[in-house]
Image (cartoon, rainbow, N blue to C red; front, top):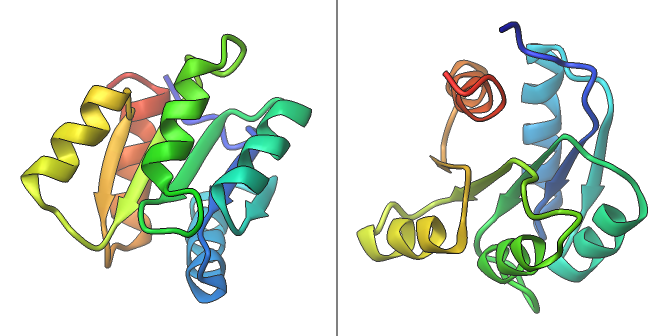
Length: 128
């Protein structure tokens, strides 16, 4: 199955530079419809207002962390199966386990490039 780059993607990070980096990587892969949120609660409001095909969220954010956002998404009946990729600077085993238990679709460690991001997205969206 080919990667559907027409999906609406929401990227969430409280660091604007990182939002810009991820947006540019997504554009390199072919995604055009990209929205941004700078914290978990803003992201949740956007997710409830419009259907997205994918969420890429940073882990370390204030006041709502990426993990808390993921838990809120999985607890919402309309969003429960939404593909969710967690971005983090730390690859600590307990973080990976916590994210997996919360229902993360995939996990990506910074820094990463377009190729790595595309591979993770394809795994999530194409189940491959």
